[in-house]
Amino acid sequence: MQNLIASSLKYENGTLNVLDQYLLPHQQVWHECHSVETMKELIVSLKIRGAPLIGLGASLLVAHLAEQGATKAALGAAINELEATRPTAVNLMHCMAALRKALKQSDFVTNIVATAERLFIEDIELCERMATRGAELINSGDNILTHCNTGALATAGIGTALGVIYKAQQQHGNIHVWVDETRPLLQGGRLTAFELERWQVPYTLICDNMAASLMAAGRVDKIVVGADRIAANGDFANKVGTYNLAVLAHFHDIPFYVVAPLTTLDTQTTCGSDIAIEQRSSAEVRGLSGSFGTALWAPTHANVYNPAFDVTPAKLVTAWVLDTGVYDKNDVESGALTALK
Ligand SMILES: CSC[C@H]1O[C@H](OP(=O)(O)O)[C@H](O)[C@@H]1O
Figure 1 (spheres, protein in one colour):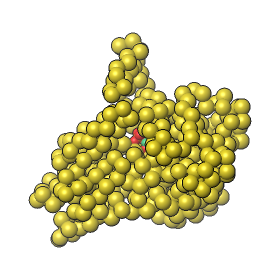
Figure 2: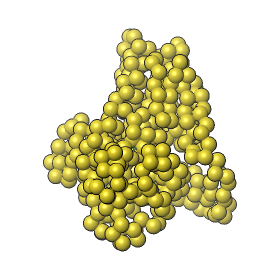
Figure 3: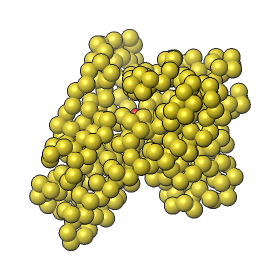
């Protein structure tokens, strides 16, 4: 397999490495990964995260195992186990389905490697196309609010929603970003802030509960978020807290854009209520530990509700920005969106 390098995932000279996103921004630790068990742990613990990146990391591992001589049965089992690690993001299922198809070929090793390479390289190109299309929606001087992390750390390219922001900043030079810290795992405060500093994009970090008053004060011009799965009717799942923003945006008449590759559109899922929402551990809400130290704030045995995602109905979305184009509610209702698949 050829060398493939992204911000938080790299395959170089036969070695697969994953940047530990749980330890960012204060520690940059790469984990070597050559087994299904290791990749499963990296995915479940969100050391590797982001809908597109999870699928790419799993794909590179399967291709590596194939080149190492794993049997068809072992590769099939690896695909199944990796696919089951996180149920909401459809990109993982898309990648594993492509590998299953390659596995059926007689020269399955060659096909699996070629598929993993194609998926990785395609993602870089998809990010560029989404960013270019989405940046056309951004005006000079816009204050954009974003949630979670949807940048280069979560993809093989420049990102989905954050890629739009990068491209808009390149074009206008005077974009400002409100960054939702994104409880409980702080993907915004830790990862998006880290990325925007690297790209020298002006930003202000806020707690998630501060977005409403900013909108009421007229200080948010647009909201741009990513997606983990878009249903056939345009409803979509994204990091928990996204629905809050969509409702607030609707109330305050603020444009609300979702940015994702076409592969995130799952026409087999009829509507948002059919999307499986990953439930995560209570410990994440009770307190955190990592490179940022340990802070346990809730009672040890507090009951916790910790869905990783929530669902935003299509009626609250201004436009869906895909690598294939920008689509509005009319496109969704007319079937133009699902006709793309
Ligand atoms: C381009 S990443 C899309 C999506 O993935 C993130 O979830 P997680 O951090 O749990 O992997 C978040 O929902 C992003 O919007």
